[in-house]
Length: 319
Image (tube, rainbow, N blue to C red; front, top):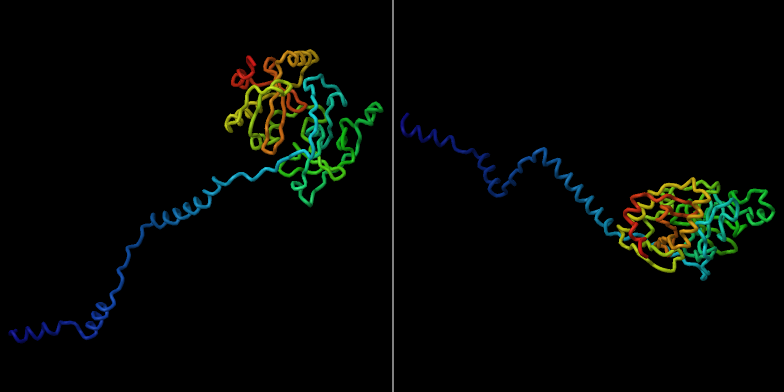
C-alpha cells in the first residue's frame, strides 16, 4: 500500500455526518451527570431519620405544655370550723361519725367538706349533668326511732341534704368526691369509708384521691392544726411522703384499750394533724400518732410502715 492509499483509508474512518450532529448537540446542551445509586442501608436510614425528626418536632411541645388549669373550689360563704375527735371509739350508727354530716353512696360513706358548706360551682358543673341518684333516706329520723330501718348503712341515706341530687364532680373520681345539689346550691362530699366499716386500703384511698397529681404541699401540725411544725413543698418530697403513707397497712383489730391509748396520746400532744393542700384550694386532713405507729385517714385506722417512721420520725420529735 502506497502513501496515497493509506491517507485515503484514514480519512474514511472519521466521524459520519450523523455522529457530527450528535457531538454538536452534546456540546451545546450537555446532559447532567448521573448520580451513583444509594446503598440499600442509606435508602432505609434516610426515611427513618426523617420520621424521627418529625416525631421529635411533634413531641417537644408536650414537655413544655403547662398542666391544664384546675378549677378552684371555694365555699360560697365562710363556715366556722368544727373540731372532730378523730380517734374516738367507733360505734355503730351516728355516734361513729361524731358531729360530721355524711351520706352513703355505692357502699361508701362520704362526709361533706367544710361541715356542709355550699360551693360556687356555677362555672364548674357542665350544663348537661348526668344524675347519679338522690338522697332519699333520713338517717337522723331513723336513729330517732331506734334505727330500725338501718338507714345509717343504706345507700342514698344521709344525715344532711336529704332530697338532694347527686352528680359526678368534673376532674374527680366519683369514688372520692361527689357534688350534691339542693335548692340550686351545690355541696361537695368526700370519701370517708365504707358503710360496712371495712377499712379502705391506704394506697387505694390515696389513688382515688389522686394525691400524687393534686397535692402541692404537706403540712405537719399539732393535733388541733393551730401550730405548723414542718412543711414539705418540694415536688419530689411531697411525692415521696405520699408514697410512704401509701405503704401503711389496715389496722383491722384495734381494741377498746387501743382507742384509750390513742385518746391519751392525743391529750398528751403525741397526735399530729397532716394537712394536704391541693391545687383546687381544698385540703385533706389525716392524723398520725408516731408513738403508737398509727394513722387515721377518713374513717380508717392504719399501721404506719417502719420505713415511714425511719424516714420521717425525726419530724415529730421535740416539737
